[in-house]
Image (cartoon, rainbow, N blue to C red; front, side):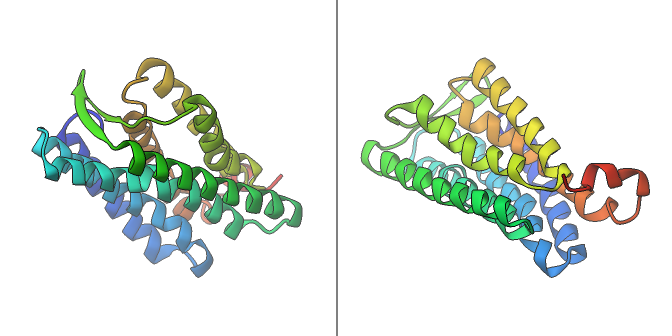
Length: 217
């Protein structure tokens, strides 16, 4: 998380517990969704360790690269993959398939940028900043958001559309108010929101008044 080691480890523990619970209660098809909080738990645990190290070193750099494996590789590929896997409407599935390939393309470009230009890590105003030189940064942020958040809007499940709205709001807040630490802050917001998946997997079958939220378009 972007504020302290304590906050990062606390978030990691909560998300790991939520993810484990979701995994055991989800049906086989939805287990790909239940993995999301678990992945975020691992990512936040890594950033917690980064706070503990809190000084330039080979360990700090290794943790930074591990954090970016999630931010740059896993999320732009896995999120559209999950949405495609859960979708049952052909047209939307085709769009999600395209977004998954867009996510793969974005992930490969970001990986190349890190490998070529390297990574520097620093703390600014209680936030961890991952300095990576990425050409045409705005264009790649848009492509990244299109692959990840865009796939949520394409889903025929209304829950994911609401989730997409929240994600888009956090993208704008993170970029406008925490530009330097955008990667860390947005991952924090996304990690916290991933706990809503527990709501999706546990509450939707039990409460009729929530059917409006989960009903497909």
